[in-house]
Image (cartoon, rainbow, N blue to C red; front, side, top):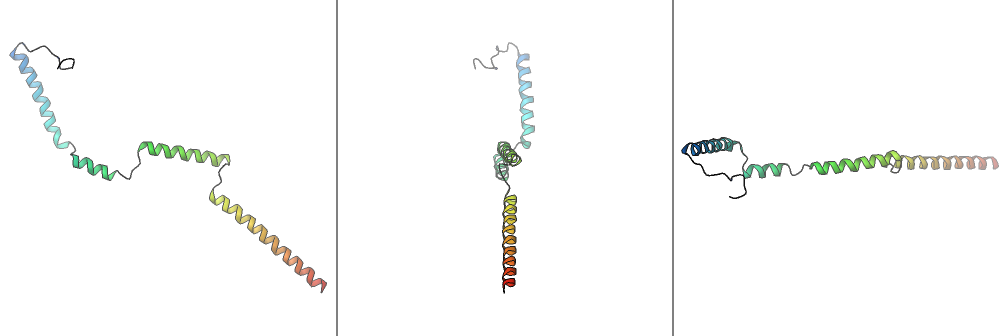
Length: 115
């Protein structure tokens, strides 16, 4: 393996080989000890299915930015809430009905006086 981190001169003694073998045995033992704690493909697939409905951090960040933009528009008055629009419509209708009712009573009173 030329040009990798494994380029080493060949061992010149049995002690050097023994040292390398001991190192490899310890690393393999660590891997064997860790294997029961590692997730299987089925575990990962199960976790992926459970997390399907959750939003990613990028999606949450995008929603936050959208909400912030809408909030700023509302504060500037460029966007009215639905409740506010309905309230304004109801207020105008009430004023029109009150004016119409007053006009009818006024005209009815005039008609009664003219009789």
